[in-house]
Image 1 (tube, rainbow, N blue to C red):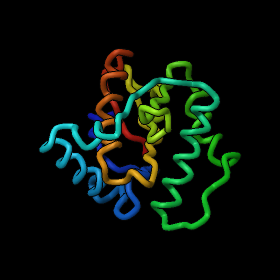
Image 2: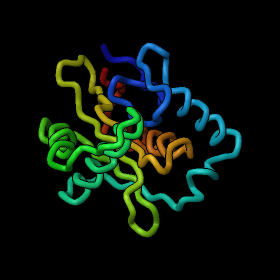
Image 3: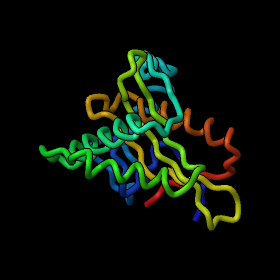
Image 4: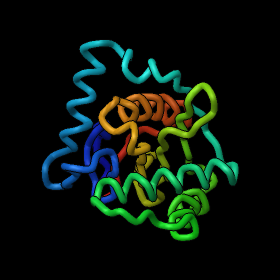
Amino acid sequence: GASEWVPGAASSRCCCCHRCCQPSAGGCREVASAAKRVESHGSKQANSLGMRMEQTRAAADVDAAAQIWAEATAARDGEDEIADLADSRPIIEGVLSRSADSVLLLARSDDGVPLAFAAVEPVHDAEQRTAELSYLGVSPRLFGQGIGRELLSELRHVLRARHYYSKTVSN
């Protein structure tokens, strides 16, 4: 069911770190650690990368999110082989195609390089307007730098503006 969405809570599809993503562990220790660093030093770590966030459905941005997903899950799982875009693209497209209210939030560096993404879709059978975080991906070269935390913080603002009253993380 729907519950309050806690940034950093791990799901079976979490790729925010490569060591500890275990749904039964009560959340990703890497995200929690990065979040504490960001909270204790402001958002200096993440902002030092010059990030900007944008909601998008552009094909190139869907591909960028799919590539981040493929790289992050390979790194998380300790795999040398990264999935082809043809295999990872349908994952992101699936979220966006299920509803016009689905959101792809992409974090970019100031020079336009995709850094991380969140793919969210509405839960249609919920009693209140609920958003489900289906996929979250951070470029492996940025693991542990607070990028996921900053992305989730911005996502909360985006979802509030879209009148979602509760959030959940998919399992």
